Length: 131
Image (tube, rainbow, N blue to C red; front, side, top):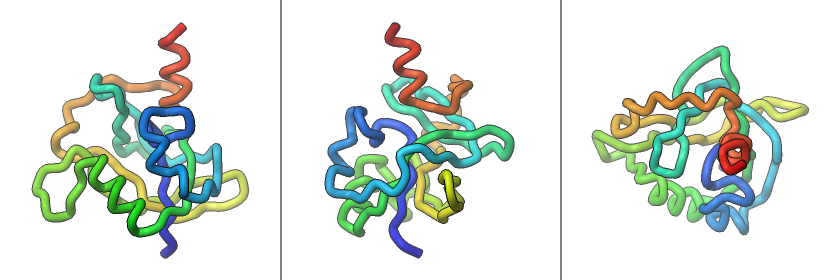
């Protein structure tokens, strides 16, 4: 598998952590995965499993160093028993194909977040709530 990474929150273009991906290659600016998006109340969202709803985001090609830095940002370690996020591989749907990519889903520390973002789009949700 290549190092594709699906991002749906603060790592997206125009958001607070986009700088982590400035040297990454954008593969798709509009793509989606199955899941539910929830507002954590901490200024970032979390993705939970759901096979009928869609979460929108962007797909990037990253190198191992970028992936390691994003693991640190997301406070993810395979050695931790409790993480905010867990990095998994899941199919990402682009306009033309399905690509298996890394993405971060809910970990033990964020399981209680239940503020559903109905649109499944963090950027849209922020825009709608700023106005």
